Image (cartoon, rainbow, N blue to C red; front, side, top):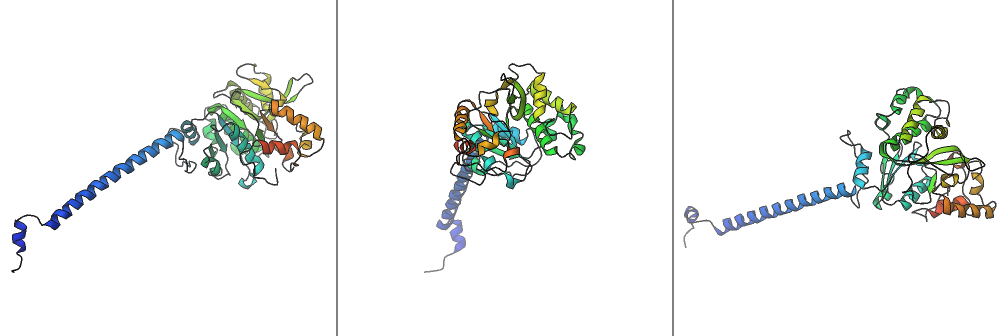
Length: 353
């Protein structure tokens, strides 16, 4: 048997090995094309879900960085989340001060508005501070307050020109929070809440309302409070409040630019569809001068009677943190009931409630 002449073999046609290799190459190429198509389709479907639902079911809360394009981060969040109602809060204190009591504000809001959107303006809280809520399917983000953007085109823009002077005032953080709440409501519409409130009812049907803090002997409103504001986008009342803030600003007064502001503006603003004033039981059922008692187990009959009335008539309870922040609610107190009946993580407890 002689040696094989490879040149002769080539000219007589392809070998079996060459044919097998060629077929294998084609199969691999087709497989790669098929896999690529699946990947592209999967990415496309994922992008559609993100646009439709605002996030993946197990994904991270969105952290959008870089320059602003057509929409701000808040506008994009609201647009993509199909919000039933917008809620806005502000937190300017250190992140480690955001204890259980304040988290109950978040929990109670979401308990009654599971499809609402919560935006917490804060320069201190991590952007993923509420990741556990996000993972449960709730719409909530932390946003760095961009005050110049929020007030652009509003009467508050003029006030901001003196910001370097205003920073020197001892009430600056309270005042900047005030302008954030007004500008946010004017720009987006919805509900502004201070972090020392517990929501006790669905707020969806309330529009253009502010609550009475102190009423006269006949039940008439004497002092209003801006700790809770619910106004439609472009509200004329909120616009007038920003005009008042700008033209009468006092660097040396906490109340003048805050609680007293809405009282002054409401005093000259017509009642009707653009402004409704609710009675004290709606938001401020217990006055700040009397709230201390309701952190204790003192006078249980009275506490029970007040609790029963609040359950029927109160939309949310403002518990005056400026006065009560060092108080720990007794297990038999009204405040203990409030903190632990409108929560999502009710089995979690802390030294503050």
